[in-house]
Length: 279
Image (cartoon, rainbow, N blue to C red; front, side, top):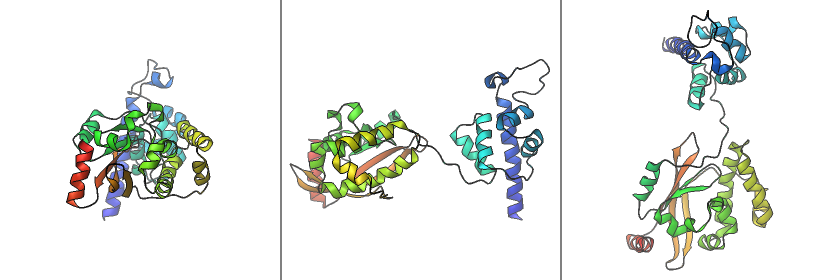
């Protein structure tokens, strides 16, 4: 009995969801005349049906919560007709028992102030924020000490760019080649998500021209899922240092991630590392 009840509830929720969003849209916002005889708020059913490219009867059945099948293409069209945002679009797919829609990745370039405060509250833990293009948008003092982000202009403050073109970054990672290959394979996942983001394409094209290693390794088509593990670094004052790292999602909608490092070693070694970070 649970399944039928659940399906009925979802159909009721779908009917209410569609009606509410239809009534929220002013006809003028869609280039439609309001007219004097309009009795209902927002759009009429026939107007939504026309905007979504379906017949009035079929759309009426959907809004009434009847058990009819819908395609992903229609749901995308309906989302546009009702001016749904990304979260509302996903909810519509769930209410109609469809597989969640794919989201086209876009590069976001700002970080909420509270996230910066969070990083600043970690004085001995290097942390920074990456977007989908791997631009370094924000960091704490510990990350700056480790990677010297502030020395680079904003347009070149990109982790992938620094990995292949900055001599100091090349020296910091030890061994450089093995770790950069792993990071490049992780970047490839984000590149696949951003099929319509010209900023990422421009980055890849430019790196192909200026970095022979990137050009060669980019052709390998390797994809590495984990965004965590151990990063091996060479720090002049300390020698070889191992840091555990992981990636935490800060904003799923905008593809913002926090990369967090913690010293991996004995308490005595960690104390020495912390003193160097804070110096």
